Image (cartoon, rainbow, N blue to C red; front, side, top):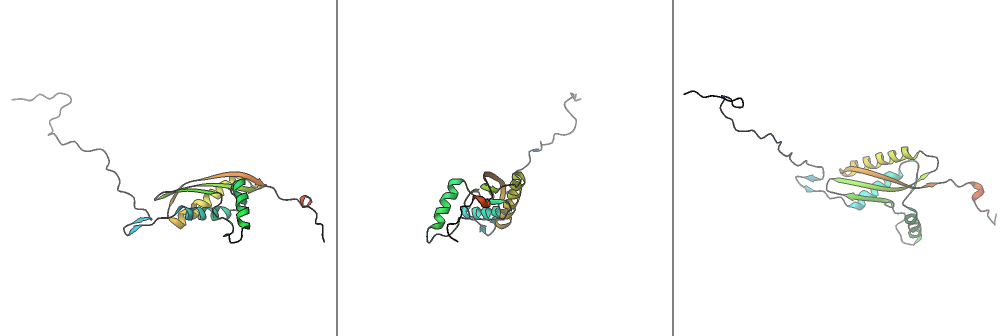
Length: 161
């Protein structure tokens, strides 16, 4: 008995088909999910870190939109208040391993806004990742105003000496 092979057949014994799809990667162990348990970081912690890191950058005059700054100034004058709100002008979303940050800033006049924005992004991202272990996926900087230096002639004259 002879066997005739067609073009698509071979004389080699049939082998089971291999699964060419890659197996899903095991879940990546983050610094916040350990064998000992989870470390949960509250949003207000990330907000404060972002606010401090943003204010550290030279050229940032203030943080928050106009109305936010106005309410903050009133709140600071109330006896017993905790002073300035470090998280003013900072919005964050925090997941188990990632964070996203939105910042509202007022810049000093004469500074390169593009360079300042990149410096803010770099400093905020580095500070949050170093202190929390969260992966910062984005830092959005919104420049709401430019602070003009007050000229001496713009100040009202004192009525007393």
